[in-house]
Image 1 (tube, rainbow, N blue to C red):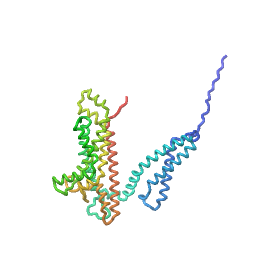
Image 2: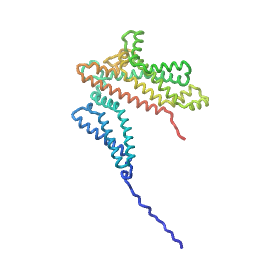
Image 3: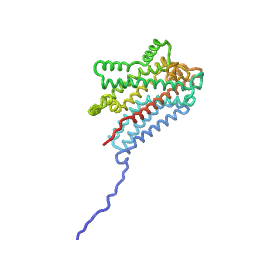
Image 4: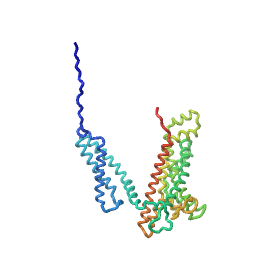
Length: 366
């Protein structure tokens, strides 16, 4: 006769809270950060009662919020965790605070432009020009079209030249010619924008007539500034393409030019797109060369080869520098033009990201 004993009941599981187990809950730092920012912003909103949105101190609110977060995360970690964990949390929070401090000028700039620009961010601003307008009203449709046309033309001129120059330097260029081109590109990178405008203005004054200004001159001036940026950025992107890809293509008997078109460029397309967007962002806000070349006009002109053409940076500068009888109306239009320019850059960047994602080579795993 044999007997067997078995236990079918397991030991009961004891559930413990994260706050009593020596570790903070996973999302608690983010909760404390959000709570700290909420308290700080609420405090500054109370202090700003009676003022408009533009007077709100966003920089002070973010700075005070990070100070509150530093204190809160340290105290909470000291209670719920060990001293070693508390010091680690404090150091991490200090790094995050340094990051916020670095972003404060950008955040302050964006907040100020948005707060000031919303006053004239209306339908009239995007559908009217400044023709026959001397006070309130009017808009910047002529400047928006001028910025789009001139920047697009400059991009069409600069991108092929810059990419082909970079291809030559990386894939073909050797010896003195390549070194000379690299030196000239480096020199052009540091050229002040006003010099580019003066160069184009002087050339057209010599060959056509003094005092001439039209949209194509502005596009050429921006091209002088864009080409070295595109060359240097594209060159770096092409250099990081692995040589194994080129060698594999050559081993299959593919000619070099086709290897560049089908292998090298598609591999580097994301970086090249980013480079082009950096070049556009570099020149789209230029004022000095466009004042000299594209000129100033209150009328809508969409002909790049005839008559002056207004652009958004020149429109903002002109509205701020030479206000008419209603000073506030001109200032509101200047801020709205700055906000529009920022939105155009954002849209262009988003579009470039989408294009790069579509045309980038698809990586498939085994």
